[in-house]
Image (cartoon, rainbow, N blue to C red; front, side):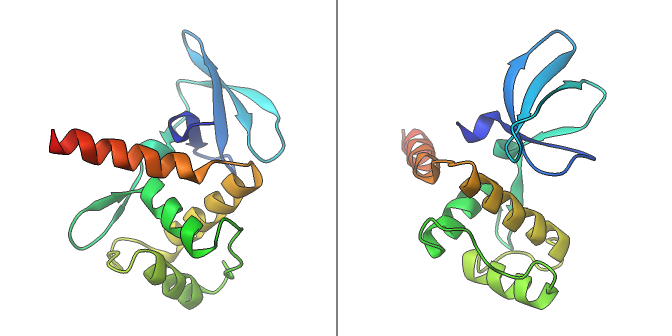
Length: 142
């Protein structure tokens, strides 16, 4: 399972794995309950690999944030209370110290934490994210 194949669908909770692509639709499978469903091109879909978090210097790809959480939690699910905005913000500042608090809302942080926990439950290989980052750095140096 690669992060490029995982998407979020507006109006639907959770994350989905893209299984196949047709002319006017995608077939996706929920990471939570493994149910498959078609998604038309009228629905708003965001690939996790395209999402970034604002910091004061730059935008950090979501995969890097997931890897930071993975390292902080030693591969386990996080147990931060998603209902406590101050705890969420404090937790996120440990994971991404320079995130832009004016543009990254507690609702965004809540979603990132929930997605991370879904990925852990689905058996996502966070080490593969580290490998992608290393490859990207090597390509940038060439």
